[in-house]
Length: 363
Figure 1 (cartoon, rainbow, N blue to C red):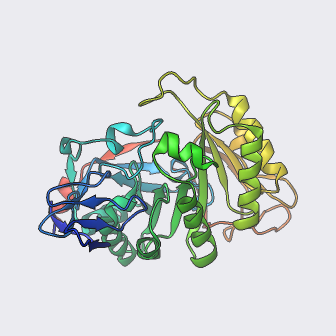
Figure 2: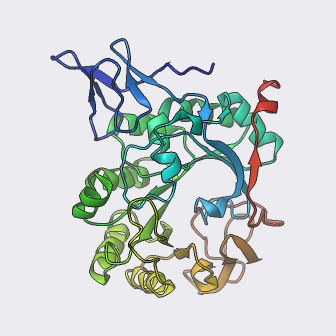
């Protein structure tokens, strides 16, 4: 059922009569008719409702590497979609037209969870990705869609900032097979000044995912010149990942381009990405990648044992694949961390828009 007033979970009543949303650390306190900072969770009739259930800003089939996920069925296709709004307010947002939207005309497509799952199956996608804006804020829709996907053997991928409270976090990730968490920087000052949030809840999510779930985890950090790209910060972040999450968690450093409220900051030089990658590798991380640039070395998966190049990538294109079906190095037999299957050919650097309207009638 598609509804603009879908009952939300994770809230409680306050003594002053307002409702507090408990989905994320923002703890928005709302009177009747008010919306949270995310804009899509609203106080209505003394409860929280989700105003974007079943409504999307668009559907596309992408390569899984675009999420970015390099160790989750490489070369496969993923049906991607998002809604509107966000629970952070990043001044450098690269999807600001969706995540910062306050107009529901962005929500141009409608689909039930079952329609999404069936579309992914019909179009031979390995997975469905909740992306473009943060799925935490449309938890109820994402969870129902994940359940429907699992009914037809479709995997689920959350692309998220990880800014979520513990109780909601347990339910949300219970239904996800993989997650790419956006670790935006490694100081609370960065999160406070540029994202209107805090670092610790994100670190808590990362530790939870790695230590308490079976969700496959990868991390992305967008490097912004002069903001979060110093050697000291990158060294500290890499050391923390190695100590708390382990050397096998893939880390993606991606290039910033001027956008939203940071048009005065120059694009990230490719040399910065290479420097960050070198720092992370020296800290002991096994799988470190560069993104948003043509960099074959930075896009390739190397065997930590024999150092052979196993999955050679240029941007989202796979040029060579030398893993066995079970994810072992074909040269030395070392097991590569991740989820792998028999590889024949890659989906490649394509983006195929999908309309859900024909799918609706088939459910």
